[in-house]
View (cartoon, rainbow, N blue to C red):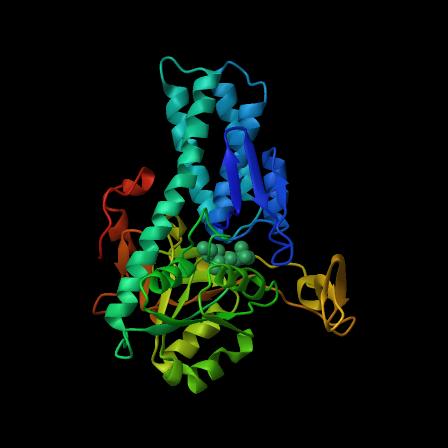
Length: 392
Ligand code: MRU
């Protein structure tokens, strides 16, 4: 059975409540942009591509089920206002802002036509939002293929052609429309028999690694081991050589024009550890995550989340022997009264990144150590569909 974080058919949207995973698989109905805004803010749905797609489809569902004005300009104004609102749900992941910009363009064009009507504008919006769901899966499969090829070409495969990799946070089917980005690379290595072992971090404070990535790895029967975030450097030192850990692969919430990358807190430390241990550090992201208007990491707004995500932990009761899924408890794990800083993301400088794996190939730095990410947008296909897939 394929894990599905987003279930959509015209007029209907359900999301897998990721706060209940891995212990319960429950879907929430999303009827409107307000429902989506709350689901994103509360992290019932999360991961940069998934956030964008859920927001876009929620508005599609709202439009499909409401009585709309017959006047094109009025429907366009309604859509613009809802998109503006949806973008405020989480600031760091750029995919949602990028999706909103592209959807606005489609709506503007539909409203400017000579035969424009409210229903034409609505249909143009819905068609474009639905296409985003399809595109994301295709993009991720291409990322998986390019990333796996790159690792097998650029790292030591002398041991049975197999490598081990470490990943962080959750970048799989749950964070995207399907397949995943960094986890897609792991999936691709595994499916071609080239993966020795995957290691995943717990990813404090929200535990996307231990709850979600571990869940996906178990579900896919990929050989994998969970570590806490603080064990990564020791893992590379103590098990790197025996396990042939040749790369760390992570996703991204926003890649700036110079390659600086915002991703889940802890990514930066992993990049430093990778450099120290002489292994490759790869960022896997569709072009919807690359924001050429953000010049460098300094310009990325980092979301700060409530301190209670660090001081409290929630889950089903475990009596030491077995789980009781009927009793969900919140437990305090920090001294009462301590101050807390909880940035959800950090920025990894481009100089620590060996390659950025996109759906059109892996971007590497030039001889001066500079990424040229604008090159992958040259064909303008990011506005519609990438026609080709190939190495760069
Ligand atoms: O706070 P989250 O769970 O939304 O953070 C997710 C990440 O940082 C992912 O690594 C990133 O969005 C890429 S998902 C393909």
